[in-house]
Length: 431
Length: 166
Image 1 (cartoon, rainbow over the protein chains, first blue to last red):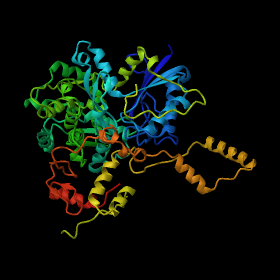
Image 2 (cartoon, chains in turn red, brown):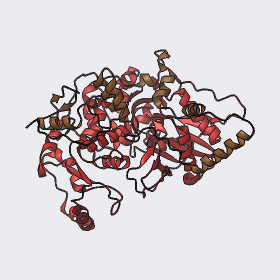
Image 3 (cartoon, helix red, strand yellow):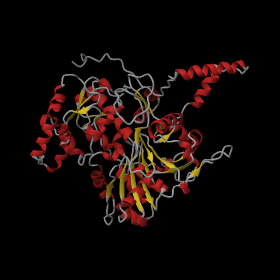
Image 4 (cartoon, rainbow over the protein chains, first blue to last red):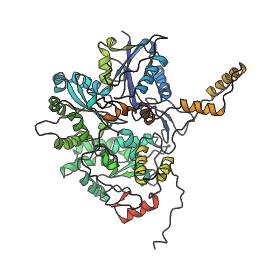
C-alpha cells in the first residue's frame, strides 16, 4: 500500500501528515507573507521565529473556498518537498474540502492534485464526517458511535457550520452556515483596537495572538459590561497587551498574565485565591522576567482591552450585533437539527461536538449550553462535547480513515489524454 | 465655545469601496455592508496587491518572448496583455458564486446558498457604542451609527461620522 498524505487544507492553517499517525507532522499557516524586512513573499514555516510585524499576507482561500490555485500550488509544493518530504507521484492524497464547494472550484482542485502534483489517487472528504469518525472511534461505547449520529459544530477560520452527521455521511440538506469565523473576529478586533488605541490594521499575526490570549466568551454580557466600565482595581477585565518593539521583544505579550485570568473568578462573587504555595512557585520562577516586562511603560507600544475581550467572540452568538442579518450559533444549531428527521432530534441534541479553532475561546461551550437550553424542547437532553484538540480534530479523523481500507475509496489519477475530469455532482456526498 | 472647537487637520484616506458606498442611494446600508465585507479582507487598506517580484522569471519570459518574435509571431498588444492578465487573475469567491448560478437549482437541492442560516427569529438587536463599546443608546442622525454619551458623540463627529476612515 502506498503512502497516504492527509491534508486538511484550512483557510487559516494547513494540517498535513501521513495517514495512520496520531498528529499531523506539519501545521503551517495557509498563506504567503511578506514581513517589512523582506521584498519577497515568504513561505510559511512551522517555527515562528521571524519578526512578523506588519507582514502583508496572501491567502489562497477566500471565504473558506480555494480560489487562487496558483498560490495554493506554491504553498503545497513547498509543503510536500521541504516540510513533509513526500513524492506526490507515489502517494495518495486525502484532502478535506469545505461543504458545498462550487463545481468550478472542485474542478480546479482536481486539476491541481492530478495535473500539477500528479498524485496517484485522491479522496475528498468533508470535515464533519471526519470529526464524527474520530469521536466515534475514541469512545466505542459512547452515544456517538452507538447511534452513528452526531451534530458537528465546526467553528473555523472562515465560517461556522452546524452539520448533522448520520452513519458517517454528512446530512447535507440540513447543514446550516454562519458567515463568521476566526478571520472576521480578528479583523473586527483589529478595527476596534485601531480606532480606540493604536493603529494595528496591518498586524494580523499580532492581533491573532491577542485574540487567542485575551478574548473569552462572557456568560453574562450586561454584568461584564458593568464591570468593564469600572475604573482602577475594581475593573477585573482590563488587561494590557504589549506590542513587540523589534529590539527586546519580537513577540507581543500580555503584560500581566494573572490579570488576564481574573475574569474566571468573577462568577463566585468572592475572589477565590489560588493556593499560596502554587503562587509562590510561579513568582520565584519568573519574578525577574515579570519585573523586567512591567517596567517598559512610557513607550507608547501597548494598549488596554476591556469590553473588547468578550464583545469580539460575542459576535458568533449574536451576529446581529454586528449588523449581520444572520441568526446566532444556538439558533443555527436548532435549525440544523429541525431540518433532520424527527427521530434524530433527541440523539443530535445529545451528541453535539464542537470543533475548529474558534471554539477555543474559554467558556465557549458553557455559553452555548446556556443559550441552547431554552431553545430545545424540555424532554431532550443537551450535551456538548469539545474535542480535545479542536484544531487537529479533523486531521485526526482523516488519518484514521486513511489507515484502513483506503485504496478502494479513492479516485484514481485519470490517464493521460483521457476524457477531462467529470464535474462531480453537487448533491451526493462524494464517497 | 462650540465654534472654537479645533478640528483635526489630519488627512483622511477613504477606502475605494467606502467611496462607492457613499455615492450610492442608500448610504447607510451600503456602508454597513462594506464594513462587513471589510471583515473578510486579508490585508487592511490595500486590496489586490499584484506584485511580480520574481525578477528571474521576468527575464526568462523576456527571452522567451523574443524567441517567439523571431519566429514571426505577432507581438502582444498592451490591450491584449491586459485582457489576458484579467482572465488569469484569481477571481474572488463571490464572483465564482455568481457564475455558478446556484439560484437556478431546484429548491430541494442543497447548495451553498441554501445552507446559509437565515435571519434571526428575534428582530431585537443590542446596540453598542461605536466609540467605546458600551451600550449605545443614541443614534447619529447623519450616519446612523451608535454612541452612548455626549463625549462619545463628539469623538464620533470628529473622527467617524460620514468619513469612513480606511
